Image 1: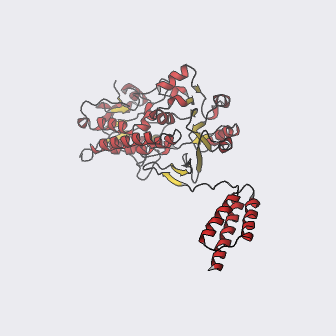
Image 2: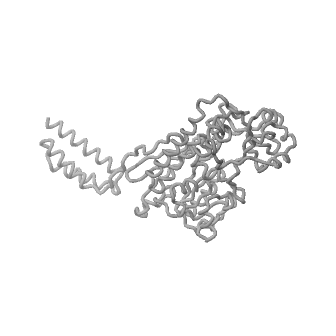
Image 3: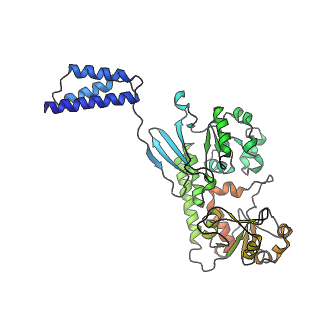
Length: 419
């Protein structure tokens, strides 16, 4: 029994030494102390062993190893991120944040902003809660606004595309700056704003060069791929991701549960309907007509609203071009026509192509565009606040396709095109 205890003790000491060599700031200090104790003390019982191990641990000056990361938030609808907890830190994992990316992952550590300076030295370590933010996409503004944290935004990319009135007011007063966009980003302006983080979106690898430049200036960049999510609730779920940067997870959970409930309630209105109108979407662009795939965000909204999107390719996400002749064929059988590019009236649509005036949707005034909340600079609140209000967009579409189900309903994002 004595030899067994001695063997257990020696193994324990050796393991402690190995651990010390891995994590300790002075790998030999702890091991020398351990062997001095081993040489001087005989192990007589389990209590002695426990006491000696305590003394050995006390001799080391190594910091305690980090706690193993545990899953903190596993998205229910979104596919582009998940969160872990590691001690007091939150670990954000972002997957493939731009179209066509494969095997690309960014990992960010969200650390209390009052942590020691050396804990915040990495460009992938973000101090939270955020105090100063630059957003390169208007969708990011929507998540921040939903959390009532718009006052933290100090920079945007293209003020003309922004719908948020608080941002416009702050811009007029000088509290928010326009930093430009893509290749025209003003690095000097970004540097002067001293942001905690720049929220960016990726288009292929184009933004990588921008991120590298900003990182070299000591400015942190976080890529978000919310625009790639093809479930309407998946886009809205990035609200939960943004909340992690503000330590507002509880508020985000409450908001997101409400969004889900409202979306499912609206969806339930059309669950048992027999009439599912045929829907045409978009208009010609550079001699091609792009139609979303059947797994696309817009196609799912149409389907959940009780409609059928014509020309949507099964198993496809991306919008794909069809010939103008094929598109005209679809248009001649469509009950409704949505998103006819920049058209704001039937006259605009007829000026694109006189043949459009012969389509049933045109003749019956069933052409609708998501342009009711368009900005003078060409932005659209459909793509801004709409990302956190998919339940409202869904009700708009139900109000269009099945007005009898929502009597007296007033459209929020859509408008009917008139002469």
